[in-house]
Image (cartoon, rainbow, N blue to C red; front, side):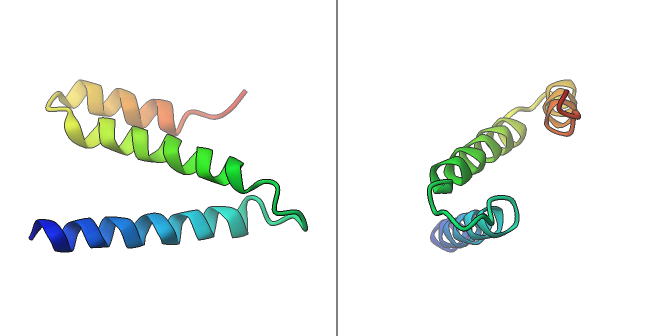
Length: 71
């Protein structure tokens, strides 16, 4: 059902932000939490774009850009 899926998505976001903060931004300072939030929003936007399109080529392009190495 929709309410259950929404609660699951909220719990997933909470878990993901904790993991991002702990794994990527595990410095002594808490000043990097906004950066963790920014990364989470980036991932959310990419996943929303991936799930909302009906075109397979667009989905492939989103995945390719997401997994593209940073230069």
